[in-house]
Amino acid sequence: MSMVAINELDTGSGVVLKIPLTDLELNPDTTIDAESDIVVLISERNDMSGKPSVLPSGLAAWYGEGLFKERVIEFDNKADLFRIYPASGYPVFWEFFRTSPLSGGKAESEWVAGCWSSGSSGALHNASCDLLITYMGVLARVSLSGKYVKNADEIKLSFVGMLAGWSR
Image (cartoon, rainbow, N blue to C red; front, side, top):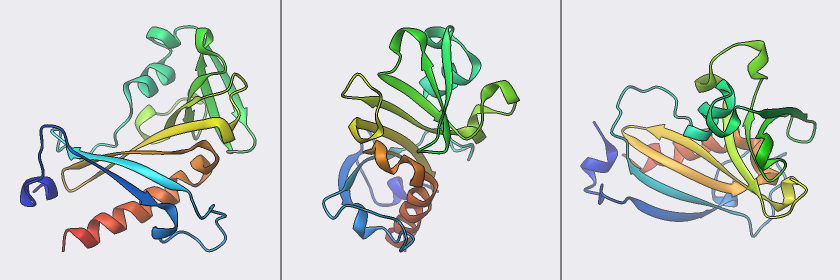
């Protein structure tokens, strides 16, 4: 059953929330700027399969299709993740994965986030990244500063905990 339908959220467009990262219960060792926020678009998920969600650009990057037919794969030491860029978009936008697509596996389990940089260097401090989270029929698209993408799994877990609290 969907939290969205239960709470009569406008399922046509969803709702946008701005949540301070300090409101999430993150590991105390995680360095978060006091003014840092995540922006979340919450809408109803039509596909109730429970499969992890991946942005279409993430699937294209993993499988080397479309814009990513010619791709650049690099390891990002700061994020401890693999970046996959379309050759034509290098280094302005990319997809983050836990492993390289050349090692096999599935995009759905390896995809972390889709990012773009406001500068031409692809630096994380100039980047914005989108994560997808599903919970009880809710699809949340979370936008955050690129410097926090290395904490993506922790942010996802904490946000799901927040959603669970709202559903009680």
